[in-house]
Image 1 (tube, rainbow, N blue to C red):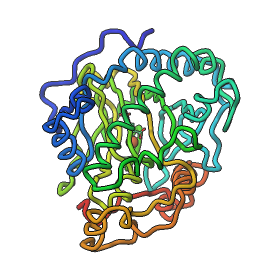
Image 2 (image 1 turned 45 degrees about the vertical axis):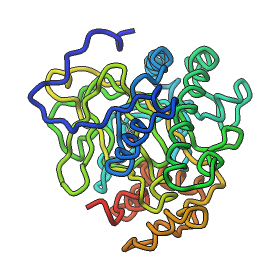
Image 3 (image 1 turned 30 degrees about the vertical axis):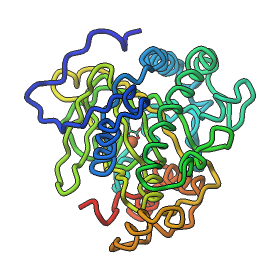
Length: 356
Ligand SMILES: O=C(O)CCC(=O)C(=O)O
Ligand SMILES: [Fe+2]
């Protein structure tokens, strides 16, 4: 597959934001130093590199699945388009999403496979998929989902303990047996000459909609806005290292202790910008009926964090995970844009009080 061919390195003269590197095998072994490093990353930027995660083969298979899917005729892909009603699963056509409040359209396409559909395969739970997805369900997609879900569950249990929650409190909200918005996403971003700007972003500035994202990139383009600054900084892809980040749900559950940071995707820098960028994410999201609010009754640490917050509106919300997710997806669709108001309706914790 062309996507595994030699790619130019990330340019040396482009500034990047360093992330802490967390070793998954040490986390599994309960290594206190590694757990502290993870906690440091989770409570500052909410992004870190994860090495020794053991999912490289499945990640490569998922990139192949993405390339095979994107190579299908456009009409075939459109049979599986996610639509404008707030469902994320399926194919997303180029230009179907807005990237900012002006309604500027994206140029990326992606395939989203629901975790529920993969784990129940061949029985559809939410929808059906192109033949290229079906053909790799058993060999690639299910193993990828199970392994990355296991990683996210291990990380969540560590955060659960650090937050002073009774064992399993967070994992209980992410059970594989219950339906959720959890999904794998493979994104294809074609080269987009013309410089870097918000309206030319592949993916506009956003926080992730769910709990924990396990992300794999080959080319640069992912940027974060480091809290306390107003500058976008690149995260450099490191071979064999995933990038993990926290989403809205963990920020809300923890009363703001865990950070869900603003990020976006722009064309890769330097010579990398001439190549198609592929990226692969596994999004772990709370199960559908979970209410997104701070777990103050389960943890005095979280209760204290909320009591000190200047704005508690996000922490006392009553949206279910399903509604939160559907709202964000729906109002991001270009067809639903009716001005800045609709764009705002697509937002999650982007404007959290401690982000500035
Ligand atoms: O492609 C990337 O590097 C990031 C993708 C992302 O942020 C997302 O899909 O939510
Ligand atoms: Fe994201």
